[in-house]
Length: 262
Image (cartoon, rainbow, N blue to C red; front, top):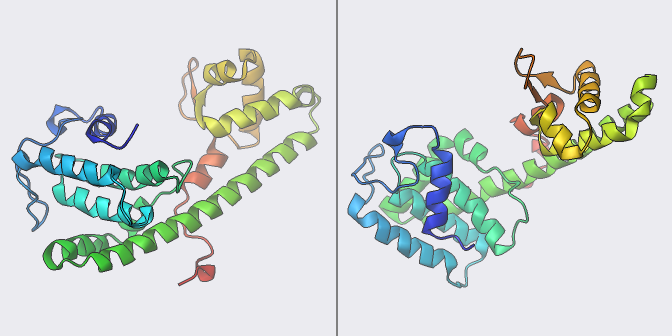
């Protein structure tokens, strides 16, 4: 599906689910708003402006997709079409455009961290486009964010692959006879945990086609290895976290900064 208004609205509805009707999930704002000193376009203009942006997103241009996504982001944030969630949807648009143009196969980049870490400059660059037409300054800053995200994603993927190899090697070398009997199943379960790192025994049993008791036994061993932790004390329908993996995903410390190109 191309990136059109109904996709943007559906994304916003999913994002704001559970936040309450005050934020109008899946609906463009019906009132004027003010963001700091910036006053976005009146609500009556939002639908037309988003329609123009939709046309720009989907038309052929001579601009590289990487640059085009950056321009779409600043325009989306300028329109400010929702009462809340504009920043998150605007950052999501960048990744959707990367996928739509073939720059990415999967949504593995997370430029939001760079924008949040440098939020003062982020908002300054957006404002400079609006007040001075400084698109070049914004694009230079935006490209730094994408470069940072690419390097961080590459480093994180490498760390995850290394961790997965360590996990499999650990399974191969465990001395417990009981575990040895279900070693191959343990590897299947491990693969499933990478796909569903927050899970219940029932979920993994269904995903792998293995019995509840077998999965429970394997997860119990994973808990002893401190790979997995229980998220609650419930006896039934307990939820677990693949903690060793999630720590890699949630780690926000930059890696190998000294090796980054300028």
